[in-house]
View 1 (cartoon, rainbow, N blue to C red):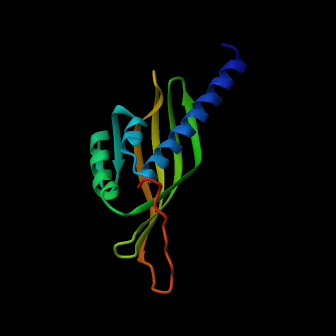
View 2: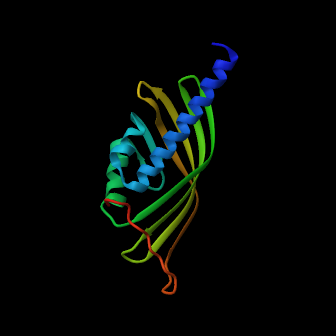
View 3: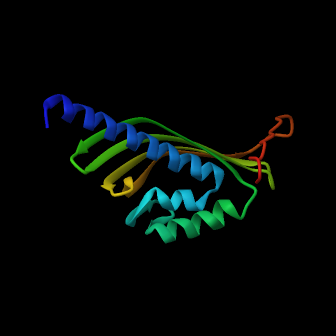
Length: 157
C-alpha cells in the first residue's frame, strides 16, 4: 500500500468512526435500542459510572428502564473527537454535552462528560468494543414556573 493509499484508508476509517459515534448518539436520542446494539461488538465493555460496568445487554437493559419506558427526552452532543487509527483497531476521546428533560416533574439534567472509546473493524464495519464515560460536571434542577419547556416528541414516538 502506498503512502497515499494508507493516508486515505486512515481518513476513511476516521470518517467511519465519526459516523458510528453519531449513529450511536442519535440512536440514544431516538430510543432505538436495536440501532444502539448494532453500534457495539458482541463482547463490548461499557463503563458508565455511576451506573456501573456492563456488557451490551446490560446497557440495553438500563437504557430501556431509564429512557425507553419513560417520557424523558435526551439530547446527546458528541464533539471534539480525537481519533487514533492503528490498523483494524482505533481509540478515541470525545466530549459529550448532554441534557435531558422529564416532563413528569419538569426536571432537567445537564452533563459534561468525556468518552474514552476503543473500536474494532469488523466484517460489518467499525464497532465500539469499549466505552468509558468520565464525568466532568452534573447539573440538575427543575424548570421554574416562568420558564417554558416544550420538547417535541419524535414522529412515531
